[in-house]
Image (cartoon, rainbow, N blue to C red; front, side, top):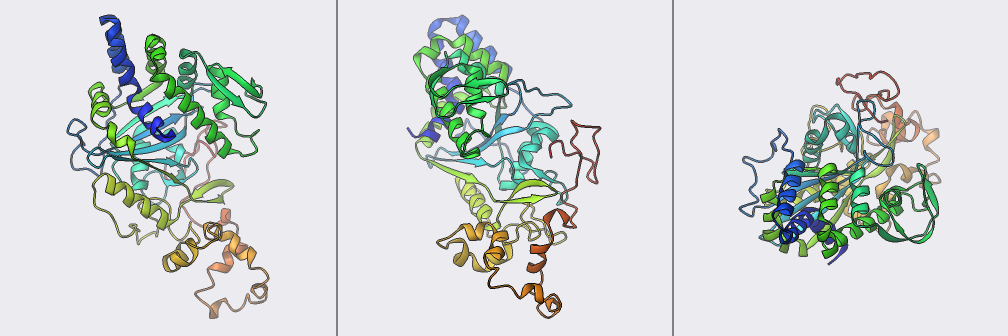
Length: 429
């Protein structure tokens, strides 16, 4: 079984496998399992705006689930009014049991998204949780991907620590000696406890590969956790595992839902497509964001819609009043290459050097030798109306854009919360 299959199966069925195994230990074990499942089950007062009726897992209907790793509860981190949590990792999984296929989409944390679907209130995608928890996060992701988000599951950082400790640690071959927030992890082969295992999964600044290296180590840790979760040794240690899950996880899936997924949806995990949604980096108001491209997002939306057996779209819905997309922040004002990709998608985005198309801000610097006339033609833009919008983009910093979509707020944890035109504060800039 491939890595991402193990991750999906582990997240959705590990509890079912553990509880199924502990029934042999007697009624007390079964009661413990039922109690744990009831405690992590947390319904939210939300209904998808993209479904006429709720999806039925019992009837083997295609469904989606949002998986969130919450940045709280570990390495001394806390969640309170002054330190609201964010989502450290975000994945959307769509599952179709009839087609026996699934798709897992990893969402970059810095994707700029519309928090209120109003074309005015934009922020980083992972900040949605800090604004209003799981419910708003589901709404924002649903609006961004233009598909219904049917269910959710969360686990905080302390949950990973407790899971690793409950299973007796994990063995890794650490390539980099580092210390993260007071936790030292030496290089070489070691068995790491929960605290060091979490640090190993989260370290980024000391890794020459940065976030790419961190993501690789996170996948390694998750894989080792899943492998042990489905082992006989873990079943025999069910109390510690149930405690780790019970104290650090939440989901709106019921116990019956979990059993149905484990028994009726399992073949869909043998055919998994893995996708990564990311855009181009842009600095706006001094903050780094990932700005999505229209064509890439539309393709992904339709891929997920087909898996959920929903009608596809020929184009993104753009609000003509403000030119912002209703399916995410993708309008011409924020993706400089969107006009060109509409007419030259095949020529530029599918070229041998796709990096040129991904970062339009680098195209003009590369053509400096061909465009020395730009500085000498400041009086000619009136005669070349179609080319005029491109020249100011070189000279005017993005932070000076006169656009209401990215209000500048002071971090709430540094001083009193300031409210902007939208009435919300940006808790992490």
